Image 1 (tube, rainbow, N blue to C red):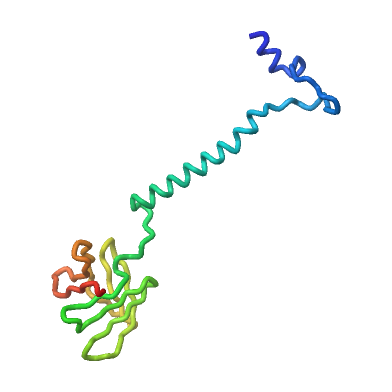
Image 2 (image 1 turned 60 degrees about the horizontal axis):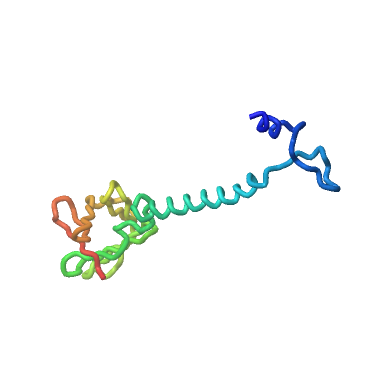
Length: 146
């Protein structure tokens, strides 16, 4: 115990001064300096593992919204293309002219198409089992194309 008190006291330090070394310079513990890179590396490793776990578990979702893609109704008379940027294009086979608009996510798994003039469609529900969009009353069912 008395020896520990002597070693922690700078006046009674057991550090031997080397030629050319300032005796007033406090001695540093080399083991303290060498632990810092290991602690930093361990922290980075823990952070990388945490990010991988979050990505795999689905908490952080990097995949596009399930509505993104091309959808068609019935015999293909109506085709809806929902783009990742929120835009949408409707094509009616008999009309031939595409109609531009946008799609909005109104709730989890629920979407709405909005025309360029602001007219909103009925809410479309995404069914992940069937990979289809449908209205609540099933009057319109859009299947993923391709």
